[in-house]
Amino acid sequence: MAHIKQTPEQHEVVVIGSGAGGGTVAHVLTRMGIRVTLLEAGPMLNPLVDFKEHLWPHDVDHRGAEEGGGVYFGRGEAFGHFNASAVKGGWTLEGEPYTVAKGSDFLWFRSRVVGGRTNHYGRISLRFSDYDFNPHDRDGLGTNWPISYEDLAPYYDRAEAFIGVTGTREGIRSAPDGVFQTPPPPKAHELVIQKASHKLGIPCIAMRRAVITRPHNGRPACHYCGQCGRGCLTASNYSSSQVQIFPALETGKLKIIHSAMAREILTDARGRASGVVYIDQESRREKRIACRVVVVAASACESARLLLNSRSNLFPNGLANGSGTVGRFLMDTVGLGMAGYVPSLENLPRYNTDGMSGAHLYMPWWHWEDQARLGFPRGYHIEIGGGYNMPKVGTFHGAARRHGYGRKLKQQVRKEYGAFVRFAGRGEMIPNNLSYCEIDPEVVDRWGIPVLRFHFKWSDYEWKQARHMEKTFAALIESMGGKVIGLTSHFDRHGISVPGTIIHEVGTVRMGSDPRNSVLNGFCQSHEVRNLLVCDGGTFVSNPDKNPTLTINALAWRASDYLAEEMRKGNV
Image (cartoon, rainbow, N blue to C red; front, side, top):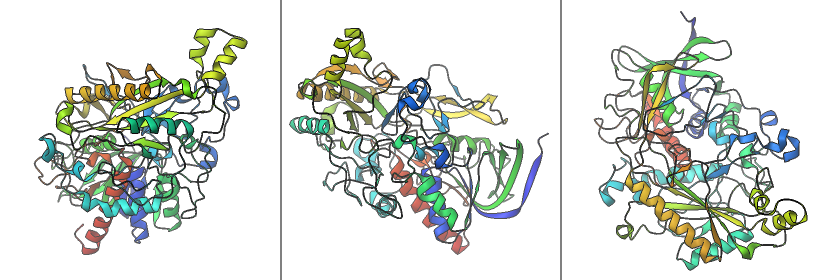
């Protein structure tokens, strides 16, 4: 029998998970004077040791050929060889398996470090549009949110103003304007892409990205090293660890318990959350802490797993799961990537195109007004790539195949360097009953905790959307006088991304007005357990074409304000 250690103190608010949601909750509550205990499954982050920015390929073994574990597109960016990422995690974690049901595909990326995925994500920060909150009213598909854009807009303002987001005010309905810092100028190849997009009637505007271009809250402006994916010692890009959690520690109101793998949430005789049981990974002992409030922010699927594993006589199907919807309506972003070669970009004068990590421009959805004629619901935005990125293993493999070696090879490499462009579509998935996660009854992890089993199916809606992306990307490349090279994502199969590989999984603990078909109310509070909140992507009712992190920040900020007031009133 495992040794269980009972912590004698009564904690005020326990937050499980330290990413965008957990970090925001810790930041907001501690600034209000509320004591927060943060549980993180991974180790404490030490930027001076863990961040790998400013490394050259020759600084690592095999020039980085084995870094990054292959190419994937996630959170708006393409990370691949010589990534040397700050993340402690990945697609496969030793001793932490998950299973996938027969006939399904799903890949689950998990982060294990204080700050979670915000230490290394692309930082694309897009607001949902007004129409994104009532999708069912538009086309009869999916479910409306219990909140509106107007409810969340003040919290978008607060999140953008605090973390720092670049952008320009454009007045485009699909891309609501926000509180912006000045964006960096476009790169040369982006101006060529922008000209082609305008020719096709597609807007191409400054990317909204959580990287600051002027000093802000004690953080210096970005110095454009282009290595955001490996961490940022200056904290010029947003991560919950450096921007929210470390400052919260300085208030004296935050306690971090790292390397703590949450197993279940305990409840009392009234059905209220009363504590958390976790495994201390360093001592390998099971411990529990008592608390007044539990906020789950472990990421959509991990939070669903925790709730489903928290069974009791009062909650036989899992905590707060009287509706049976915990784990249901799992969604990921629809993804497709294409590369092209543009002769007009050959042999241009070389210059540093690192800038911010990723593109300085993007294309918001432009067909929201004439949806009916498209043949599929909803839409997507387009992310772009190209330029003189740091050469790495595999960069010039195409030239090597055609020209062998020697002077001719070098001439071809120099000619083609910077002449390739890339487009990546990021589109909305319609929630369906065939995409969900559940507890696998036969498999446990190294800590004895039952693991998730995934079921996932793209529908014809998503496949048709991907075909529209493919045609659009080809038209853009050809409008530039270029030639289509082919699909680019390593995980593309049958012309659409493998589920999970965009790393935008949401929707497993959704909010709603009716407790019969939702888990949470509009403030991310459980319908059934008043002192339980969920503050991550699991709360999403739909998954619009916007990257989810900024909305997680805003929802968590709104939920924190609500929680603080409910605590003041004695309601929780």
